[in-house]
Image (cartoon, rainbow, N blue to C red; front, side):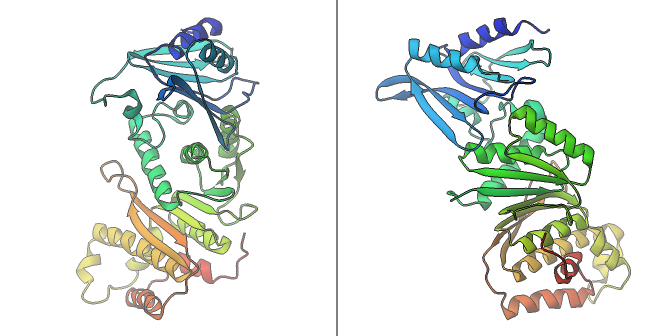
Length: 385
């Protein structure tokens, strides 16, 4: 049941100053209000000078961290944060977890649960280190926080972390093509901003209602100045300037090819694409006999479809290599959770394809008598976006 906000914040304050505090996060914003920072995180640390309360805040692009002494200094710092119009608080102590959400009417919804000690590490700091984005982060209150979604978010962020260098110089411009409801878009922004990256992110989706929904969510999170959305097709949406990183996560069938082609034309430095559905090559395989001795490979419909998936992504990786990208095809999410679990990860090197690489690609398409959609897109006289 809702309760007065002041009373709820008093309970939060008690836990924030409790010696058993392990971690707390404040994020989001109340209706019609905007905090001076987009996120605050508190946790106890032990320094040479003794125990301190570490407070890390972020303005959406760069973090700021300070350590305050227990007592009056910590109390004043906590009071200042509680006075900010955050929409969500998540507080963990050794004994309990408390979540506060401010409703549209300005009341508080509180949920308190006993700490889950099953399988916990000795330190409260260690419980969440398995995830790159803490499962208790208030962002999950907005995008959904089921166990399956948290696993997918974490798998994606690990792939993102493995793609980008440890240190990024200058701003990073990211475009998510075919972003849908954008929960991975928002997760990417949260993760990169927490790393201290100066990131600006644009989501593209063909549906205007998705653009409105995602824009409203960015405003609620206080990120509207760094995360924006446009309605349009992957091939034609206006995105300026060209991005450094292109995401295309589960864009269906040849929409993945359109995203890859646009990334190549943009000369984007990095590409992460999780293909979904592979009808184009599958349809071509159905119209012609398989080259010998592979008739058994395509005679059965289910085997032909699966082979088409593999052939499609192998050709995509080969084409990216021919256009100056170092490309890997890796597992995205464990296959127990989804059969669409491949990720094409590419980094532009500006290297020139060798004769052997060109021959490998040409021999494969000639043998199977197919022409990938991505090859057609890359040879068309299309604008660069």
